[in-house]
Length: 251
Ligand SMILES: Nc1nc2[nH]cc(C(=O)O)c2c(=O)[nH]1
Ligand code: SF4
Ligand SMILES: [Mg+2]
Image 1 (cartoon, rainbow, N blue to C red):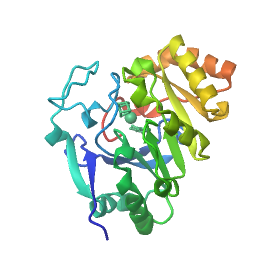
Image 2 (cartoon, rainbow, N blue to C red):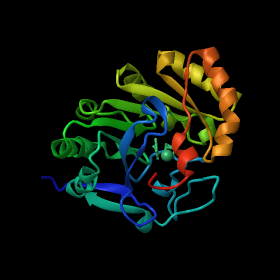
Image 3 (cartoon, rainbow, N blue to C red):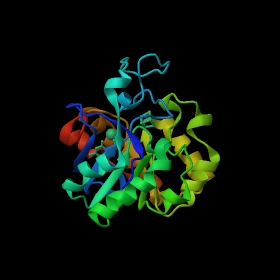
Image 4 (tube, rainbow, N blue to C red):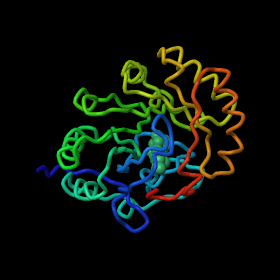
């Protein structure tokens, strides 16, 4: 039992955003996973599809949607026990901790993961992260897969904050890490090449993913981007959940 408290995002019904779906991106695309969406992010990407986790009224952040969110409506706190009691009935074979940026709350994640495993048995544990916060050894020991998505210049972030050399070097040396870069155009590829070389990331561990929050935009970039992957030796990843469900919460 633990009464440690987590900040979670909220779904369309006003409930904590915990849901069973198909992993839509990256190395385990297609696998059933229970997603737990934590609220809060240390970055502020202008095309973020979960801006309701950070773009609150009164903040100076810019987003292409030009919408601000009410923090009290969009963020709620849950004890670890409360989260486990929502996750366990879904009988997960795997979980994905996402956000926002889940590593903002990483001090609490080992206890959460342990509690889920003690209730549900062994569950494959993935974390979606922007790769700008150094993971602790306690967290690394419990995570099977880090889906690391460093943010490039087109995200609008200060790259001194978004691309921290010590953090990227740490993720690059972890066997659990896969890298996933959101790509809009040719210029982004040069940035990826620099990062891959600087941190010696094996090309086989790199996914390129088309920027887009609707099926048409994703499809329009997919042929071009998959050709680049063939040429460069990277992997292509779709955003399957956007094709299946659109840009919706809890999916
Ligand atoms: N189905 C589904 N797959 C996902 N993979 C990464 C997601 C995320 O929002 O981090 C996500 C998501 O929100 N839904
Ligand atoms: S790092 Fe991820 S959650 Fe944070 S603003 Fe960027 S896209 Fe959104
Ligand atoms: Mg998403």
